[in-house]
Image (cartoon, one colour):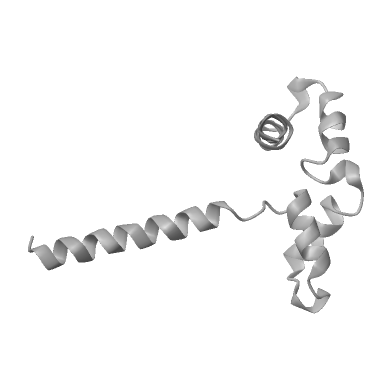
Length: 101
């Protein structure tokens, strides 16, 4: 591989890694940050999926993924009844976020 191709490949990898990192920073649909962002957006800019997710997770605090009420509600549910996604969300929003705050 020539020197210019090596540099080009390096920059390509760097750009891909940067885009991947930025994508990882986006709020998960249904989380408090996502609900706040969507609340500020014009409703005409929402997709049908956005509206459904907003209605499901953002109207009542107990259904907003990662809210204190959501975490407490899930703690009150037998762990055997949790879905795999609820386990992951609980770990991310109710354990990791609380430790990092």
